[in-house]
Each structure stands twice: as C-alpha cells, then as structure tokens.
Length: 183
Image (cartoon, rainbow, N blue to C red; front, side, top):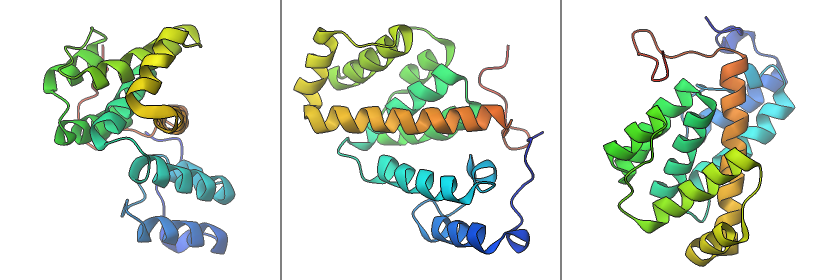
C-alpha cells in the first residue's frame, strides 16, 4: 500500500494542476511512478519531471544504453516499479532477456556488446566504491565521449531519485504483478 494517496486531479491545487497538466501533455502521457509523491511538492515535481524528460527522451545516449543504465539502477535500489518498467523498455531497445535476468538476480550479465559492458562496469564500480577508476572512466569517454558520460551520470542520478521516491513512499506494483525482488 502506497504511503501517498493516488492522484485525484479534481483535488489538486492550481500549482499542482499546472505541473500535472505539463506532465500529461508530455511524452510520458501519465502520472505514474514517483509523481503521486512528487506532486506533494509541486516545484520539486516540476523540476524533476523536466530533468526526467531530458534524461529519458533527450540525452545523447541511444535508447538501449539509456534503458540498460536505468534498469541497472532499478536493480541496485531494488525499486521494483522502476526495474519492471525499464527492463521492458530495455528489452524493446535490444537488451537481451539474459542480461535483464542477470541484473535482476545480481549475477554477471552476458553482454553481447562492449558498449553495454562499459555502462555496466562504470555504474557497478561506482555503486560499489562511490568512485570510478581512471581506466573505467577512459573506457567510457572513449566509447561515449565526455557528453555521453555526463548524460549517463545524469540519467542514473535522476533514476536514483526515482528509485528512492518509489521505495520511501512504497509506490507499489500494479495488482497481480509479482515483485521481481521478492525473496
């Protein structure tokens, strides 16, 4: 049971409604995920949703690598809603089911492309150590350029915020959807 009420568009303040309308008019087309919590603070919601729109739809990374990064982040935080939504998008973008399953269970993924391995190595090294070695950084810049690495860090930072929001406010899965991280 979520710790915040579902969004009732009729009960939103003018400021909340303005932000909700902007989200509904954008590429997401819905107010799912972290939005029920974020709308409690409309200014935070507005700024976060605009950052999220860039991270999801406007970054320099191709969709497969962006969705892989989001899926890795969802698995790291055990954010079930994020993991399920973005693992489906990662599959559609060309990430293999074997990679998704390995991420879900915490096993080394069988990557087909070096670019996928580089994203995984950079993120898992940072998640494990809070740093990235010079060698890992150079591989990432060599593969994606500095802008690509900046965009990758931005995507992951944004989706850490999403994951934390989902987890703290216990925004759960749709009825009947099994939890991918259930013991």
